Image (tube, rainbow over all chains, first blue to last red; front, side, top):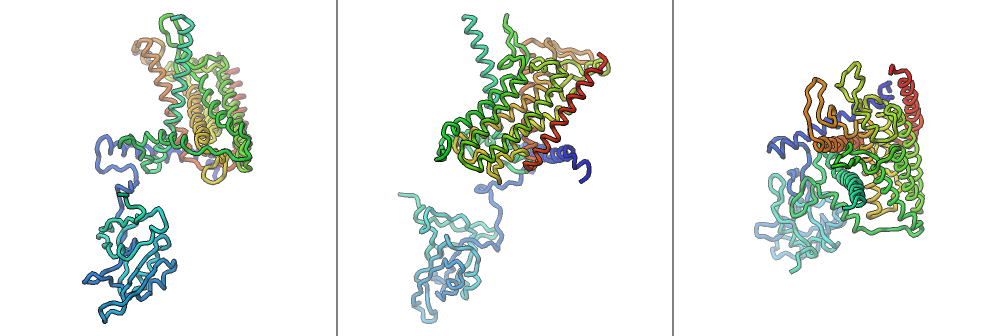
Length: 182
Length: 369
């Protein structure tokens, strides 16, 4: 260390100068914004989250959805690939016979326990039918109980993919234990 | 009204003003701490507490804090010494609060025949009183560490005691120089002495004789030791809120809040003492008892009341600026290690303040009258 650094006080003053310069520059920008109604001055990099949102990346893995066929039935053929590959074992499928003989099976139940899911995206990779996707853009799902974190096939089928800037197009599914009491 | 009642009312008014000033400044500092650190770090800071949708830049957060702390569980460990455990936060905060009493916030106010010194208590050894009160604050911290029946808290209390003792010694020794220059231990006399001109035979009446100009070394030493005495960053190893465990680890609710408030109040006290001893206290440059007398010959006559109001405002402004500066230091510097702070206190600040006393004495002796 040089002598000036060993003495400490000079370096303290330099550091105080840096922080004080930030303080006054930002204070000026805040004043320009709030008092003089400047549109461009920004004194902070803060994004005020629930009101302001940053666009999500198109590659973001968000809440799952099940894709439908043109006739509205689930595209899933209950091949159990996703259930097998899932490292968190959060997918539970019960298969049933499909009325169309060209399609082998159809899921009777397709539950995802989001309390266990680690959002690795393996189920999307493994699916041979492109029946499960993680492109809803929905991140804010919560529940007061573990049971409420299990999302059923009907819920997952009702979701829409996110818009081009990543904003969700479906409303956030609300589990039964959070529904407003009548 | 009988004169006794009037005297009592005046005394209560003086004490009340100081009490309200210190408590409100302490409360406001919690808001300043959040907002100033945010502005320094390109953030916005706490702004969510609102009353009927009115946010006022987060000014309701101190209120929300108080409500939160008052309604939280007040937990006492099973093996704790209950009496000392309950007494410790009280001791901490009370001695921090009463320390401000000797600091003058204005000159003498004349109402009719009466002369009211604008100071909560008129003490002719005010500096000693402030030291005594600041030093007694260490008992609260040690009691908290001891009474918690928690080894980590005990160690934190020990660290706090070691820090505060090494800081008090340096504070005391650095102020000796100021007392020597102005020839008094009375804060009021020291502040009055700072109204005179510095080196009148060379500089005329341009520059006032403030303590920061007559005792620059003592100013730096006092400020450093004062920051250490408040136990805040960069000297926050007694509590170490983010990593190490401090003396109030077992406290919750408003008792914890009182320790926190004591730190903020001590910040105000240190800012007030720095103002009174080094920044001219309530003095406004070139303002005498009958108005402004500028060194280029101009003068603006002012009424007695205007002068007193200007002086009180000047004192409040200087204390606020010092509080801002202490916050700036707190949000700029990293924490000292325990041994580094001890080395700084005993091998840096203390010998330098002794040197300051010697130099001041030699200068006063050798100064051509």
